[in-house]
Image (cartoon, rainbow, N blue to C red; front, side, top):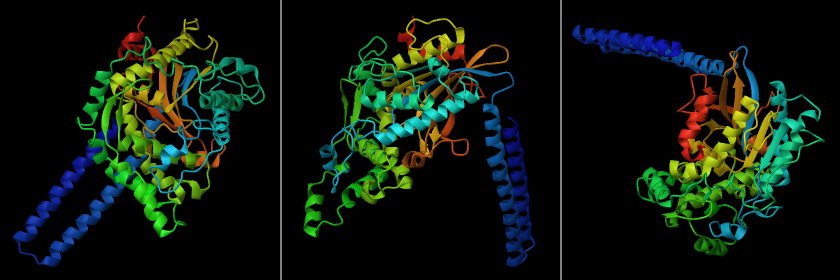
Length: 484
């Protein structure tokens, strides 16, 4: 409120100064002063207003962030009790084979050292680094000891059954507790886990027609609209696909390759209801570009030689622009409420059970972790994070990207106890920067990962906290099928 009142006073000051200027101009004309006098008034006025604007924006560029930062700092007597991390797996290889992607480019996509969809050795290293950072943060808040193995029994790690999620869990465990990593829980590799893939289960009721309508309502009813809305980025991606990587080929071969290439802009757009992991899906240029830009991001964060990242045409700067295509596709296909509710309900139910168990100190049937746990790591996929974000209307900007869910990024739910004994929940999004991932930078206080507060519109207060009771009410309202 203080910042708003200050802004209001500055606006009044500006209006008053402008009225004086206007009056001076009228007087200048009235007494028929020469042009030099009139220009002098203008020049002096503009100099003073420019200085005013500099001071104004300087004040707010420092004071408002400081106010937000202060509101997020723990208050006297507050204590962190428990943390749930919903993490995406680490850097993996593309989920399809190169032949699937080569039809869109004049040059072949690079080869990977692991099968499609597997966590790479570099991805394992990055998650081990993140685990070490999490240990440092949790010990700093008094939840875990700084070193040693004793607290390994107070952390539960539960991963989806894919290789990339299971190995991510192992990497986090190794970073958290070097030499004595706790066992990563989960179903046998390859077995369908309804916690992460709930469609068709009790907490993931299906309504494909409603899902199709929800997407149609976001795109103006026409599947071609997203192509037009993102045509600039689609054209830039298509230019990279159509011109990069075949410099050494002869002119005739270049022409042949270009003629045989499928432009992403020429892919027919359609909206369809599908089975398995998707209630509905927007197919076409945007969905294909989403996969291809994600593959470019994987090349960059894997630390590939620059000549292999987009055939030498992609760097950190233009990648941040292109990745909007992936975020947009997720916005249309994962975040609409009917889809998000079906896909996120089981995970949100587990998160609520875990927080409630930690708050009461009493076992909750169905909770994955133990009563005395200090942290729970749930290792899933970007779709899991996007669905929860869609259902609760969560947004963030991290590392220059809006609502992106890169490898290793996590939604963090912290349970705090106030000085009066009340429990509250704070939500954050955290991720390594693209450059930290690319270079496998060791995380430290001097070079930390990105961590941004996340506001829950139906629950959060001015300090971004949400009482545990209100958090539970919000989740039960958003996912009524989870109610007992």
